[in-house]
Length: 524
Image (cartoon, rainbow, N blue to C red; front, side, top):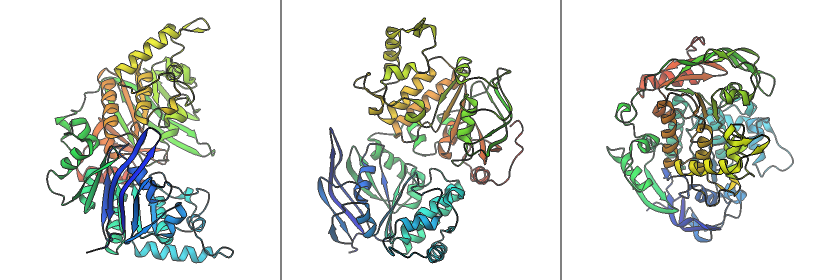
C-alpha cells in the first residue's frame, strides 16, 4: 500500500466562537493531484494554514511520508518539503525571481552566487515545462510568469508536496492549459499536488480524487473519473443541496445560457468613452486611447489579466483619477473634469474591488458607512445636520432587502464577513437607482451562495434599465454574467467578443488577454 505524502488525521482548530476545522481527515498520495473543495468558510484556508505551519492544530496529527511531525512555523513546513502557491502571490516586486528564491534559502548564509541560482532555476523550469525568467524583476513579469516563478521557487526550495490556491483565477485559458500540463508532469514525477478551486470543470478534468469540506468538516473523499453528473455530485456535497441556476453558474457547470440567463436586449447608448488616456502612479501611461460604449439594459464585461489598466479605468470613470486625454460622456454630456461627488450625483455608482480599503471605512459602523456616499441626498440631511432617523430607517430596509447578516448594525464594519460587506456596498450604491453601475471583481473572496446573490442583484439593475460595466479577471464569471465582452491588455481595448463557451471563442479571448490579435480600439 502506498504511504501518503501527507495525512491530516482528525484535525481540529478552534477560534473564539468558531470551530474552523472539526475532526478533518485529508490525505494526498505521491503522484496524485488531489482537489480540496468547499465554500468560503468551509475550512480550506485554515487547513492549509495548518499544513504550512502558520497555525497549530488544537487536536489531531500531521503525518508526512508516514511519520508524525510537528510544524511549528512556515520554516518547518519548507524544511519538510511543503510548498504553497497562494492566489495572491508572495513575491517581492522590485527584486528578481532568483533574489526572491534566495530569501527562502537556508544555505549558504554568507556567500550567495545568484548566477548559479538563476542557472539551476532555469534548468528546473525547463525540465518541468515551467519556463521562468530568473534574472528578471518580478514587476516586469506577466501574471502567468509570476505564477510559474512561485511554483519553481517552491520546487527549488525542496517542495515535494505542492498546494495551489485558485491557481487559474488570473490566467488566460491558454495559460491555464499550460499550467495543467505542468501539474500533470509534476504528478508523474511523484510530487503530491493539492489543487484548491471552485471551478468544477477544471477539477474533474485534472484531479484524480477530491475531498469536500463543508462547515469545517470533511464530508467525503471521491475518486474522480470525469463522468457525466460528476460535477453536479460534487456541487451537492459542497453546498448541501441541489445547485440552482445561479449557483450552477458560479460552479462552472456550463448550463446552456438560454436556460437560465437569456441575453438581454440593450437600449440606447448611455456611456460613451472615446480615446481615453491617463497615467498610473508611476507616471507611465496606463490607459492608451481606450474607446467603448455601454447601453442601458446591458452588462458589459471588461475582462483581462490583473494589472492591465482595469483599476485605473474604473478610477477615471468615477472621478478618482484625472484624465490626460479623451472624453467621457454620460447621456451625451461630458464627465471630463467632474468630481467624484458630481459624477455620483449624475447617476454613476461604483462598487470597488477593495471592499474595506476603498469602498468602506473599516472602523465605522454600518450606518456611517451607508451614509458615506448618500449623506448629500435631501432625505439624509437638514442643513449641516444628518438625519439619523432617516438613515437608520433606510439601513434597516437595506439589511432586510439584501439579507445582510449582522448582529449589531453599530459594530465596526471590519467585523463583517466579505459576503455581507459586498451586500452592504451594493445596497448603498443601488439605493439611488443609478443609471450606470461600475463594479470591479464583485465576488472575489465570496462563497458560492454570496456570489450568486451578487450576480442576481446586478442582473436586476440591468433589467431596470441601468448600464452595468463589470470589470473582471475571472473569465468564467464574465461568461456567465455579461451580455457583451470587451478584452483589455496593457491599457488598450483589444476587441469585443460574445460571452460564449465555444473552444474557438475561448481561444480568441485568451489570445487577446495575452496581447495577441489586437483589434481597433475605436468604438467597440
